[in-house]
Length: 165
Image (cartoon, rainbow, N blue to C red; front, side, top):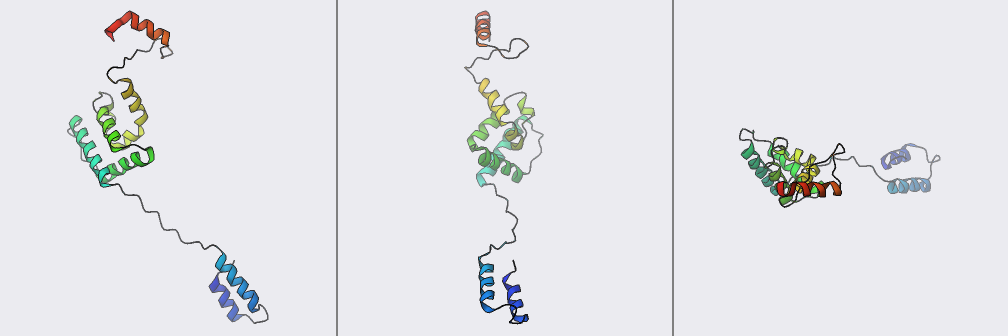
């Protein structure tokens, strides 16, 4: 389909015998109805909120407690990672802070969760581990090669070991 400017130019340069005004008007109307393709501007990146940055700074303060030699991060990047956890994973700032703090109270995870990006990546594993290690819940070691204790084995283990767990 020709654009409007090209059709006007053709109407001026071509002899009247080639195209009459009715056809020209039809072509111009069709050009107006045709969808125009606009040059897409690059999508502006979403900005982290001031609360995201506060959260990122708080996370770094928790990190500093377990790793005093940690270098100061790019807080813009950290805040953006916090934003992603909030928007894409549907978590609150409170949930983010609580899980990060829990991870830094765990001897294994405090060495592995050093930034919000890694927190987001390992969220499900951390939440599951935190759930299992919550005080008041009794954990039963895995029995056998299968690695999962059945209810019967768990009951037997509790009978044998009592409150030793």
